[in-house]
Figure 1 (spheres, rainbow, N blue to C red):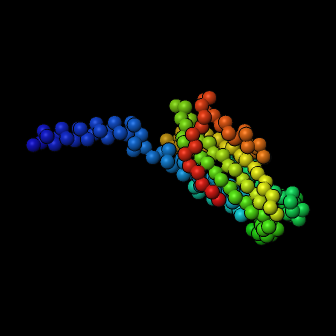
Figure 2: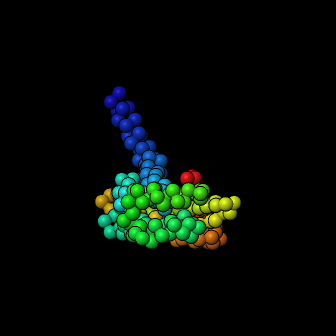
Figure 3: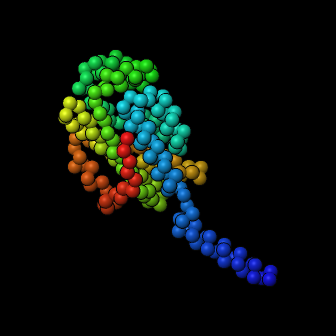
Length: 203
């Protein structure tokens, strides 16, 4: 009886090791995707003046892990709504450093931009692994509607993760702003192969 128990235990151990090796019990990829999605959601709120710079960075640090050498300035590289349609909003922004805008000033800017409708479609790729680092791509399509006219902005981000302290942490966020040039978004590649986007959501 004791021998049978030992055999069953060894078999279970072998199977668990096998499945773990296949990544079935590895949820690190899911965690990284959740982090990127949360950052994208916060970034779009920040881009549309719903968060101050300090609040935005604080909230991002609550939802994702960052390497010691990560440059926080990379977080604030983002598109902005069509301010050129509203001279008053441009003047509000010019009068003060964006990083120093208060909640009341942000609300004032949003009220000025109320006639504009902004819809954002975000796609996030699967996790890519080169054996040393991990990578996730995101791309966004921003559609601004004003007085029956449509204005488009596109952006692409590449998140680089490194293993630091036995945890995957964001080391770099490379953001490319493409304005209306959607064609540059169509052929996103990793190692000469098309990037596979697995998550899609709207804001």
